[in-house]
Amino acid sequence: MSEPRRCSKLVVLSEREVRLLSEIPHGSTSVDTEFQCELEAGHRGPHAVLGGWSKPVGAGRLASGEAVTWWVRWEDPTGRRDVVPQATCPAETRPGEVMSEVCTLFAGHPGRHDFEWAVPDYFRRKDR
Image (cartoon, rainbow, N blue to C red):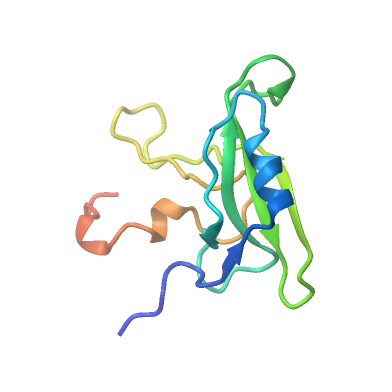
């Protein structure tokens, strides 16, 4: 059996974290409360999960003008947690092409891009 590709650590958001995410300007309106870390299994540093996003308008924009993604990060065993805005990872499999896959993680994430490990091998084309 192969090793898991995605980190198996789970987090249940506090009421404060749910409130923070639901109050993001121009963001998503519903917030889940239970998440699994979205990083590759065996990653370094804090666990992370996408908690929400906001559209690129007004003061909610990053320098790039891209949508702002809000990530919940937590550390084992300290239990330290935070909700932080981060730019999205700019990596693509085929930059500029319509059929390009994009990394859905945050810029500067540890480990490989999710398109390198999250898609089962039988969906991968051999010419990539």
